[in-house]
Amino acid sequence: MFIIKSLALFVLAGLAEIGGGYLVWQWYREGHSIYIGVVGAIILVLYGIIPTFQPASFSRVYAAYGGIFIVMAISWGWVIDKKPPDIFELIGGGICLIGVFIIMYWPR
Image (cartoon, rainbow, N blue to C red; front, top):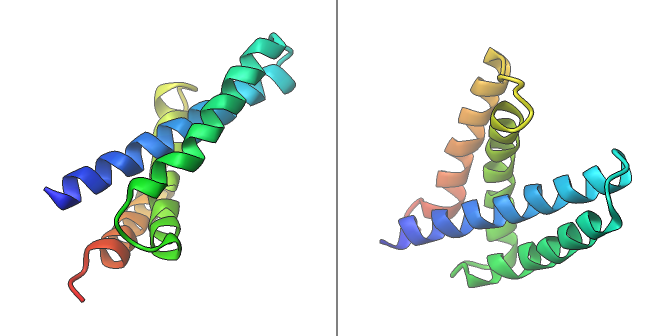
């Protein structure tokens, strides 16, 4: 149960970081309303709070989160931007997930 809750927090943090960043991008780079940027900024603040619910130390959580972020960014590009990953992105993402499980969940 611990791993499922931890992974859910990582996914929630990833959605907040990527989603908030995407909204700021839409405002600043694509000329959308500043309100879109403000919503994105608020979501980014939530992203900063979500990882604090992880039971591990800051450094371990953020190191492992980096791997989750990579896979989620590739997935975001595929689903939202309609840019399917190439074989190297898939291999790299898989390697990152292996790192996540070693960093966060390997017995100590």
